[in-house]
Length: 181
Image (cartoon, rainbow, N blue to C red; front, side, top):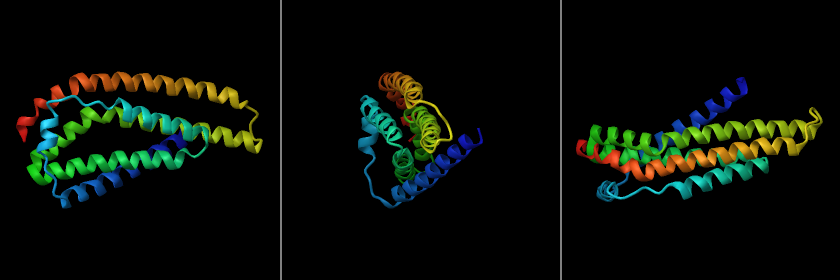
């Protein structure tokens, strides 16, 4: 359990640093937010992006290099979140910042939690495989892959449900908060 806590702390540090970096970059960038505000009238289809992220984490876990790809995915999520918050704060001050937080909660919070869970599962799997390679354990690799595959499949289904809800309800909810800008 302690190693899971360390992994969660590592992910938290990466997210905080990348959100701060993205926020600072967003403050220094001149971006027209009218396209973002007008895109709220449409639908957000995030399933393809989320599925690609989950597949990258799965294959990098099997290749035992998940540490790098996971850190990169968390950095990208944090940078884009921070950038959104920074741009909205620059254009709409505190109301824009709060709208960015609401938008992030609706569109990304569950997916970031899913990514953290997948990252912890992947690190545990990699540790077990390395212990098998070094001869410290005698588990069959096949017995390690089957639960991993089941967990990733379940997460993919949860991500599909989440993205379907965001597609149909996410922007409808955000429309109620646009007037705060």
